[in-house]
Length: 194
Image (tube, rainbow, N blue to C red):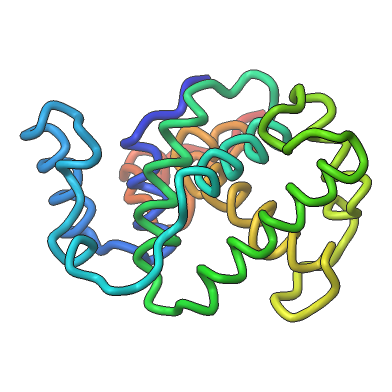
């Protein structure tokens, strides 16, 4: 299953990061600029004085997504980049963006300590191991908790929410119309699959 920018925009709408008009505008600007994501950014984002995620942070979010998403999912980099730009970079809370960056920094620090290389240079199996060794797969998400809880909250849950809030990702777990996705009238008139 291939994720697309359209899936990322649908996940953003579900997250409340963009409204219906904002999501439509984002897709229209993207089409107008030939899919150039940098040209499709809103004026609001360009004029913002707030700190945004670095390219390394975005690449690390994509690497974490590759480690936690089902193996049949493709198109992860473009999906995560679009989602993180729309959700995390536009959040009006610098503390949240800082939490994401700090959690990613902790993941990278653990990778360097345990495996002698930055997280992004590890193979995908080892990247998944780092998350498991941190305890992010077992921790309860908490923005002000332990390091494992913060990684779970700011990193793992963020990329998992993006996947399962998208229409394509929702199909993986039987959610034909994820929350915030308009779906269709016919899906409400059919009985459950038997």
